[in-house]
Amino acid sequence: MEITSRDNDKIKYTKSLLKVKNRSKEGKFIIEGYRILTLALESNAEIEYVFINDEFEKKKEHREFINELESRDIRVYKTTDKNFKDMVDTENTQGILAVVPFEKKNIENDLKTEDKFIVVLDRIQDPGNMGTIIRTADAAGADAIITLKGCVDIYNPKVIRSTMGSIFSMKIISSERDEMISAMKENNINLVSSWLNTDNYYDEVDYGEKVALVIGNEANGIEDKIAENSDLLVKIPIYGSAESLNAAISSAVLMYEIKRSIIGKSRIR
Image (cartoon, rainbow, N blue to C red; front, side, top):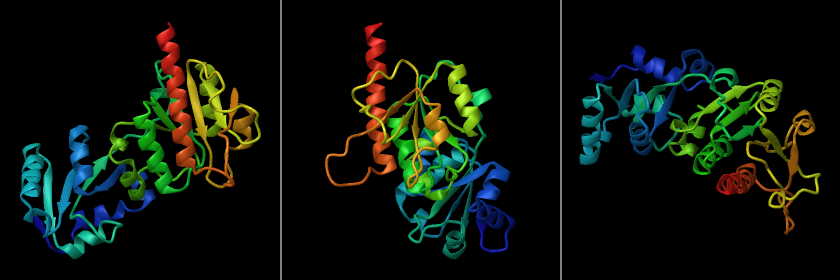
């Protein structure tokens, strides 16, 4: 189906999802680009509908992809390049986007007893960092991610692009700080915080069998109350003159060390 009017309700509705308040209200977000749409299909993500621009279907592989979408009963709308650009936040668009529903997850219903490795994000605000951390947690085999109040919206288009498809495979739970702390204690999960003022180096400690790693705000680190309630504080040594590591980089170092430790304990048993 072709839509040319910029006043079309479907175009206006899609454009509205660029705003976080509308994403939250509607429970839907936008994914943009051929690669991430293919990853969404491979992950069996629910796709409500798709928009393409005039240029997209000129390539043979793109036409085949459109046929694949339609074979799955996914409605594909074609619109002008100008209308398409109004619905995305990038300058150099690939000419395809989709609207995807999501369900809000909470600790009470979605944190499971079998979850042994959790990543907790405390006020991570940079979309690129957030997306990279989600992608890294997926690669490192984390069972869940918990985002605390003050974090950037995980369905921000820049976050989605940075996850490289991991947004579809990771369990991501929203929580308040105190609720998260209580849940970790109730489930006997060791709360581990990255903290500069400690003598514990990250590769010289016993993390235990169930671990929740906290990664703090880019500028201010982890909130004091979380540190005070942590079972373990660890740090990554700085051998050069840099003041600190980027949040996404430090999270990767810590995640892989914790995963190595958890795998080692399971092998011993």
